[in-house]
Amino acid sequence: MTQPESDIWSEWLLKRRFGGNVRQMKATMRYLCPVRNKVLRHARLREGETLLDVGCGDGLIGFGALKKTASARVVFSDISEDLLHHARSIADNTGVLDRCEFTRAAAEDLSAIASGSVDVVTTRSVLIYVSLKQQAFCEFYRVLKPGGRVSIFEPINRPGYPARRDSFFGDYDVTAVAAIAQKVKAVYEQIQPPGSDPMLDFDERDLLRFAHQAGFGKVHLELQVKLGPREKAIDWGTMLRTAANPKVPTLEEAMEQALSPAERDVFVAHLRPLVEAGGGTIRSAVAYLWAVK
Ligand SMILES: C[S@@+](CC[C@H](N)C(=O)[O-])C[C@H]1O[C@@H](n2cnc3c(N)ncnc32)[C@H](O)[C@@H]1O
Image (cartoon, rainbow, N blue to C red; front, side):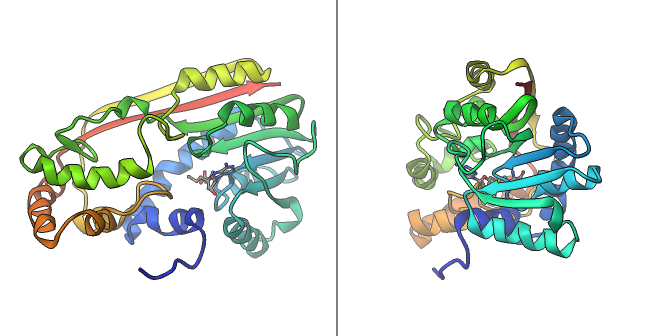
């Protein structure tokens, strides 16, 4: 395998989540823009205020905030030096650098940010990677000024687990090839053990509890759940080359790792028609949380 040019966060956010497919990239952005707008609506950022975006990635929330205001400032923070560098060059190229700061910091340790120094904290799909979620909420509370707002969006993955033994990914029925499918699933479960991985160890009630225990008053939570048949077929090549998150391999890589060439042929012959026929079940839950200090 060739060495990636940048860290796993940057590789995934800028490339591996799209499976090399421009249509998938556009579809992802069509999904994310309303999410960003809602996170920002809940944040109620005003002119002249400072917003700290924790786990800023390539700047979805931060650049949205700069666009919606003329004089608000954004502190982009992330654990990924590569993504901070990327966000900085976007800020430079779009003429907003003078309203931006870039700080390397983890959600659970924002010691680089002074207490009571920001008006808004936002974060989108970051706490799923953080084990010390309560500590992260306490840090959000600490860095906010009195009356400051926190606005969060997180996927809630727990409803999908434990996954049925006869299902694979989006619930494709793999009963006929269960033993082979199990070898591929084991690759993923070894990296993200369902019982302990931070992506799977919480739900919306935990988010509420974390916010409340950190000291936030007026906590709001909105849960959106979708359960039903997948309406659109997925391009097989895209499915093969897409990684579900920064920590895991693509399906192609996992099969390569776990299966012999003969097993791969049997597995693909079973799974590919199901994927291309648009079968499978969607189970998705996401939570928006917003609160005031
Ligand atoms: C799914 S991306 C989301 C990026 C961005 N918030 C967005 O809305 O597009 C997750 C981001 O969280 C960052 N991240 C992962 N663990 C983190 C941690 N412990 N503290 C802060 N950021 C973290 C990654 O570097 C990555 O940029």
